[in-house]
Image (cartoon, rainbow, N blue to C red; front, side):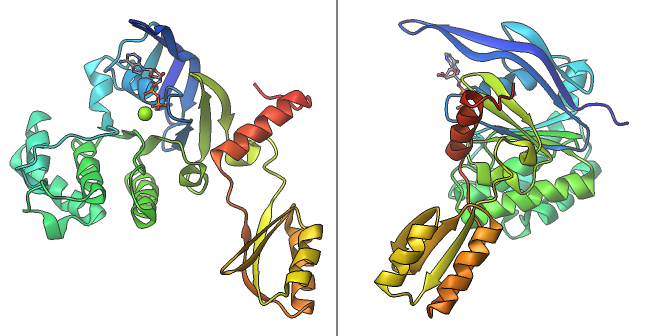
Length: 316
Ligand SMILES: Nc1ncnc2c1ncn2[C@@H]1O[C@H](COP(=O)(O)OP(=O)(O)O)[C@@H](O)[C@H]1O
Ligand SMILES: [Mg+2]
């Protein structure tokens, strides 16, 4: 069995701020991220994701507990050598080009020119940076900057990548690019990827496991399918061409309904109910435009978790 990439035990951080008193940013966090795993670290803004990541990277000293990378203390240089880090707001020397930037960080890591050139070729290919290799970063879009940030994180070929909100601020195409990249890095390069997000949709397709942080506390860690209430497969269908009366009729049988320019969208509690609704809509002359599993937000999950707690289906 490969060694766990990240382990934390009782990891805690309390900040003391003038006027705000003690802020318990991270509380008693026990995490295990296996080798070659994709782990999504979810939480609202202010939940403590960045603070946790900074402790993993040895940038912030824990108040209590410890973090280890491949068994070594996070502040140990040997642990850091195994880590590639993409900060939430990566900073670049604006007058350098992506190629120069990678060379700069390669030199810092003690790589020779041949190794740096090979690294650049691989990163440019993975990240599609070839076309902008020799253009100054100044003037790059957020999405292009994110790719350069990835290239920097790959310098030294670390087995573990820690990415702080790698999809935030990107458009849907950019988000997809990052998702696909994470999947490739795991599959083709054998990397372990730990990344944070406040958007459920960013993690659900690609993560083996997710952790959910609420007010600094890990309230869930496991597979997406183990999230409370996940088996209630809410399904959405969008239908055009229904009369108002028929739409209202169907809405009465659905779990949810919204009318819009692109037709009526109905939500059904599960796949069978959705099929029944679809059949009824077709019978009444409607045209089925879309049929898909309902998009769930992190807030939906929180609501269900709270519900599960109050109705006895509690999880730690
Ligand atoms: N350097 C700091 N000094 C004081 N408080 C901080 C500091 N960094 C983070 N915090 C506080 O810790 C909490 C968690 O922040 P953060 O880890 O940035 O959350 P997230 O990344 O999930 O949005 C917030 O209440 C934030 O204000
Ligand atoms: Mg953050």
